[in-house]
Image: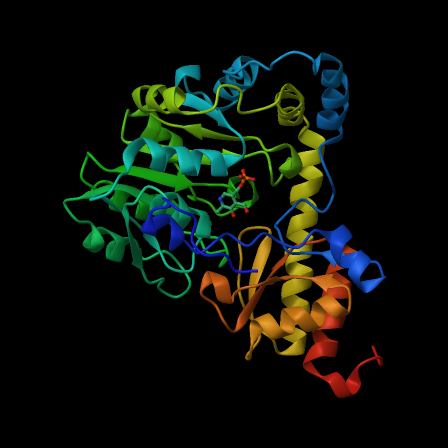
Length: 372
Ligand SMILES: Cc1ncc(COP(=O)(O)O)c(C=O)c1O
């Protein structure tokens, strides 16, 4: 039911296009009355880190206490791992928390922020909810056009959001390109460099973002426990950036943003090298399986360095996603992210990928349905 606008809600909030989350698998299975595979939210198909799960179970017995609001031990472990001072690390309720907090700390009406079309919609929402102007630059060959972003900067611009790799295209720019770009960004503008899929990228010369933080520059690098560590449901992400910025962000956030269970799980998952290794290996194989399967079907896709692929279906992507859903495969329709003729598929297990390819083949050639 569409309601009349609620009294007092500013126009700039009413105009926000909402974030559309992937459908929960249980809901789809209930509606269809059959098992489904969910390849819609770039989750880890191998599940959570077993070491993380064990630590989380233990931490439950302390659930009557408020958690450590500063996530001290997790920041300490990350500082050691990343070789940056603990004061340069902030933990968020997912990295999306930090996407929002950067906007909350820096933006207001009369100011602007730049990002790209065809990228993560939460940047748009974070900017618009502050009443700031959202400046969108077109993608170039499915990737961030860093030069166009530089050209779009206005005197009022306070923040730039870039995703590397980009979601939903799975494209990447290298460290040289980023450094060349960053050197031309005026000092007063915060660059939020979202590296949510950092661990998956095997390309040499991918990122030296932490060197930029170590040099004391105006950058906030974002990473997460939601992907390769398999803890999306526990909501833990982190930012690495200037202490003075993190100090201001700390003042405006909720006091206990990450539960004790989530902190314990993330801390243990960080040391779960075996789970990370298996997850990366499964993803490498899954990408190859999906890409060669789609090539065989003559389906166009954007080669990806992450754990998902943008698939150009050559027709109405949302309709195709709906068709696939009916056959028990949940992929993400992409019109709302700016790709009306695409769907995004997350890399699953071998069987899940196989089912995706089978169902994709079926829905593209309905006459042959049931033969494969
Ligand atoms: C580009 C990008 N940034 C951030 C996130 C959010 O991650 P988190 O679960 O840490 O909030 C995602 C998740 O899909 C993403 O694609």
